[in-house]
Image 1 (cartoon, rainbow, N blue to C red):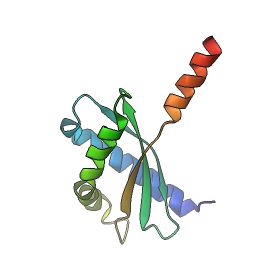
Image 2: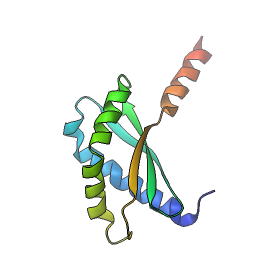
Image 3: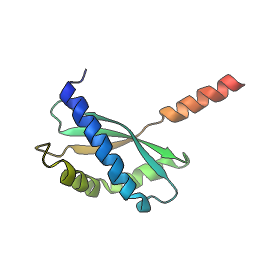
Image 4: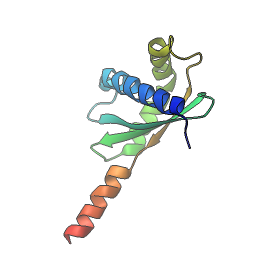
Amino acid sequence: MTSTRQDKVGRELQRDLGEILQQEQGLFPGVMLTVTSVRVSPDLGVAKIYLSFFPSKDKEASLKAVRTRTKQIRYELGKRVKNQLRIVPALTFFIDDSLDYIENIENLLKQ
């Protein structure tokens, strides 16, 4: 169960991270990144960011490229949220495979 503050901070981080990753699009050629959700710990010190990649081939390589830029992304995020949060949360990135799951279910239903 999450608090209202966690939800608000999560939504704010999702919006800001989406914008940051759009600006960094040149670093990830041929891949469209979407921040699908952000879950923030109760102390607001850790944020789990779930990313969706399109096209969906070689997601692991794309995730690895994002993870190598974590410091830079956190720095950019810090510049945006410096007036709202005392500390910038530590960022951990994960693949959100829910779209692949939905696509798989749709394919099974078509058969």
